[in-house]
Length: 83
Image (tube, rainbow, N blue to C red):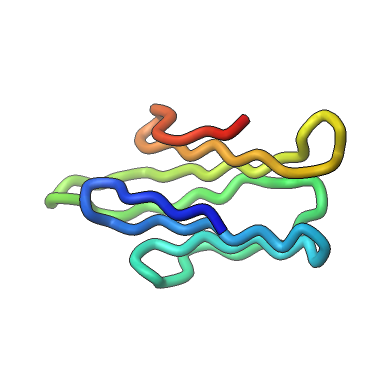
């Protein structure tokens, strides 16, 4: 599981490598859940400090098929990547 803080909000990404189940949590609440073996995009909106925020979580397969990468964007700007 990947965990990060963004302006006091806890963002967690859970990837089921063998089951294909991907879940995204914001402050311990599930905001997106999908089944995918090859990775997919999770998009959700929230409010931070009274301003609307658009999050996008991209999960994909690494080139050697032995793991997955994660890219997190906030309002279109990358705030985390392990690609």
